[in-house]
Length: 98
Image (cartoon, rainbow, N blue to C red; front, side):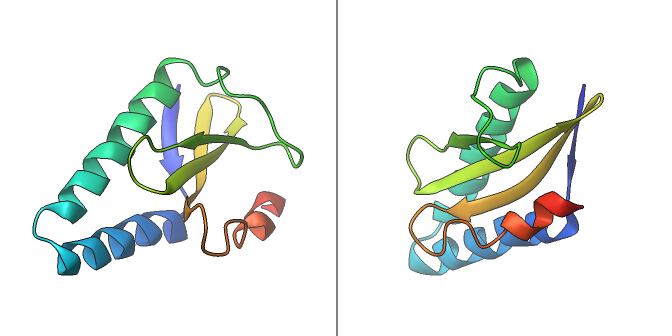
């Protein structure tokens, strides 16, 4: 399997990391590293997390208040959102229609 991102998903991650970086040096790097670790876990066992209504799966980051939402499309794990769990947490749901 391989991981692919929607263009807006990459942008969300980099914008969140930039925002954390302005609060404290290296905090944005820590966020990116944490998301990278979550992506590795998803890649190792994409069926581990339950499928939610709408056909997506979601993995919470262990430290930061973000989660990674993804769908399985054949041999591809499509990352549809990297979202803050408390700020409009499901703003991205329209992306599931693509």
